[in-house]
Length: 109
Image 1 (cartoon, rainbow, N blue to C red):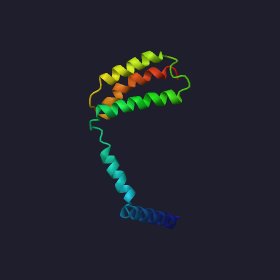
Image 2: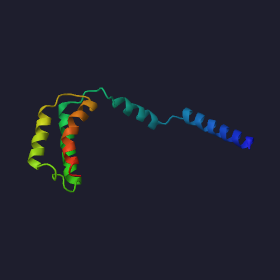
Image 3: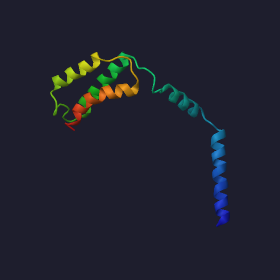
Image 4: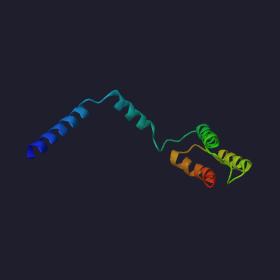
């Protein structure tokens, strides 16, 4: 039993050492993407507006009754007011701005 345990530990350590020494290009690419995903980076207003438009179009495509809880025209007025108030902001700040708008759809889920 002790030999089996010792053998398993040796195999595990050998495998870990081999994984660390053979970093693939995918690891480097992942690290680069992770560095680009900076939470404190300010996102331009144009990209934030595109994100809001994408979220609305996705809701309309996927949701079986997107405007059950709120009138469609009222929802678009709220979306336009959110877009008008945008400024360059971080991902977290944008989440706090977008959440109230999208939560209006939740009631109809």
